[in-house]
Image (cartoon, rainbow, N blue to C red; front, side, top):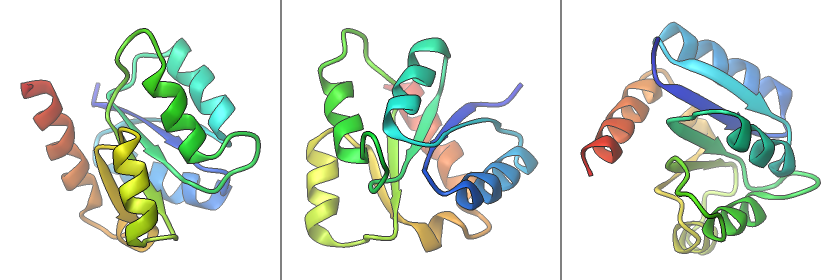
Length: 126
């Protein structure tokens, strides 16, 4: 079984496309449609990596990252994937604990799965 990746994004098409690409690359993939569902999935599963959108209903990506900061146990690394690829949001997400910040267009490119695999390996080496 491959690394487990949780995709937290309110856009079903994005979850589907990313999920397909990651499964083809050997990842085990789960999904959640908002930050609350993502936090519940984290509590219920053993994930190696989270791909997180910023703008979602219920609990946005910043709220999700803030909740992880207050958690008792350390969660998996979080890669923010967003269409709002700007310096202010990037700095805020990284300050809240995101390990990487990537524009959605790059996340949907072929080859992105390889970058994710490298990031998971780096975290495991720490």
